[in-house]
Each structure stands twice: as C-alpha cells, then as structure tokens.
Length: 221
Image (cartoon, rainbow, N blue to C red; front, side, top):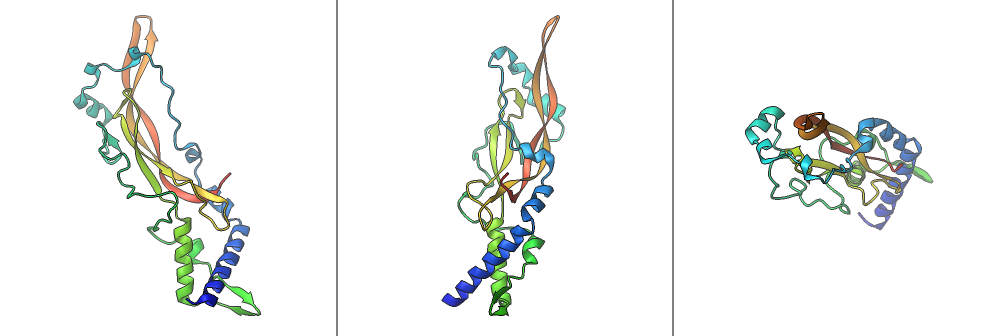
C-alpha cells in the first residue's frame, strides 16, 4: 500500500475501534467471564513448615496413589520435575503479537471499517481482510502454560497451569487487557492432617485444582 492508502487504513481502524468500544465491547467481554475465573490464577498456599505434617516415604507409594487418584492426565500432571518448565508455550513473549488460531471472532468479522471523507468510502475486500486480521492478532489472548510445584503435600506435586498475557493492552485505544475467560478443574491428592484424641491422623484426600483454559481481551477493572 502507498502512503495515502496507509493513512486511510489507520483512520478506518481508529474510527471503527472507537465505535466498537463505545457500543460496550468491554461490558460484552466482562459478562462472558465466568465468576470462578475471577480469582485465577491461584495464590500459593501458606503451609505449616513443621515437617511432622509432611507425608513419609511409605505414604508415597506411586501405585497406590495412582489408584486413589483415578484419572491421571499427563498433559497437566507430573510426578517428577518436567524437563522444560514452559513446555508448550513455543517461546511466547508478552510484548509480541501472537498469531491467533481458531475461528475469527464474529465481532471482528462483522466490522465494516467505513469512513467519511467528503464522500463515504469503503475499503477494498483485501484491505478489510488485512485490517481484520491485524485487529484479531492484536486482541488475541493465548494461554501461557507453566509447570507449578505444589510441594510434597500434593500428589502429583507438579501441575501445568495457565495464565494470561498481561504486560500490554490488547485493545486500540489501550485500556483492555487479557483476562481469564474459562477454566477447568484437575483432581489431585492433598495430604491432610487432623489432630485427634489418639494423636495426629493424616491421609490423602482428593481435591479439585482449578486451571485457566481460555483468556479473552476484557476491561482492566
């Protein structure tokens, strides 16, 4: 594109985005975010440092623990430290615009990018497609995965959790950021100790551990 076409493209994009935000796009995304995801990612637990509450070697029989756990999803659970803590991220960077995947959001696909300069103009189909692709890529919010060590009182102790890119805005004008939009739960075993009359009683109990599975561009507040 020559200089004049570039100017038209920028104007089209700015005006269209302004209208989109004005129509309540922030509220639209906010309503799509499920309440359970508002508290993700989880804050680390404060554990009692007394080793008396730690499982002993005899309590860490892998065969028995696998049987007690049931479904073991090796994509998100690991007994030993994973070789690559950031496996699956393909070196994503918070400041880079990532290539989106899946189906283009209907809100972006429906944008016309009309503008009035004396006479109303419509961009060519090729330019419209380029603008839509750029906006989709800029507002795309991938899930960043990393392996977390939950400690010896969880089994398996390594869980692959998701987070959302947050070091830059995902909207034009700036203001919106990537936030959790969906989550799921993994079952892990938790070593729980209770003081009884006969002394300290400990056992493995199943607990639900939530992880982020989808991020979306939403209002920062």
